[in-house]
Image (cartoon, rainbow, N blue to C red):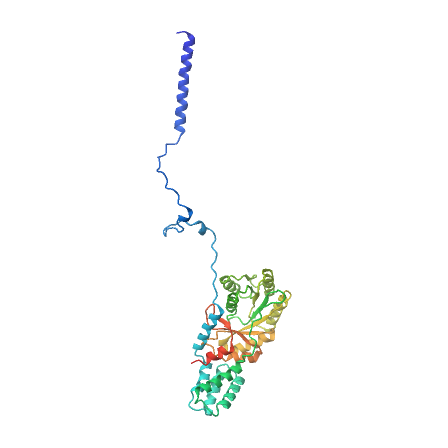
Length: 382
């Protein structure tokens, strides 16, 4: 074997060694062989796939992983709300109702009977003047036939009482602004009478009547007032404009009306502070709020809230507010079994403005427009 053959054999051997080394190195670098899996089942069409997850599943669907849309309350319709609240008023056993019905059940109408009748009505917050008017009218009408004919006697009592309540007063809320501007409702009253809660209920009444509303939390001196008002607004999807605690109430009221204009809202309802430390301070504050608001839009309603259970104290408060702002209507809260009822007549006489809304309980929809005939009929229901 010559030298050339030896070289060829050596090169071949070297090639075999190198090739084997490379092969082994690559084999070690590969991952272990995966087990052979069974063929997957065919995927179901989209419409056949289950849309709900098992009850014990911890996984969230894509729809639930994002922010949830808050569920809004649906306020009770005005018609059903009014029917329900009339029944509640009719079932209340207040002193005014008892006093009115007592004259119908009297055996005879002597001087003592009329004296007792007058005393009962006066203590029911009807007032001395209205009580004397009603008593004189009834004595005149019933002097001949008495109460022997209970149906006729009740008709006479209804007619005279309705005359005192005055069904001819305009009790409509002015909720239409001028020249495309929102109506502006300013709500005033002493803190503790349920003013903020009543405003929240008023917003529900308006939403139930398909009106868009903006709330203004201008009672900046009571820490919880703005939070409370915003909670009421959030329930029915109504925005609340608020400012810093102890901030300028007029500035908040201005911003609320501006928001109402920008949003094209139908109504802006502004809450105000009810502090009665000094009449001068109250006058300055409420006067400023009204002036600032009217740079943007006229104030269409100034509603005074009175707690119907406070009697004479409520009338004193009403006089103070009437001297401060030009009140256009009265809202009586808590006019249920705990109230005496006669305040409806007396407060209208005192202020010369009508009762426009009444609250008859703690429910969120327990606020309705006041109707003189429904009120009288409820009082005379046995």
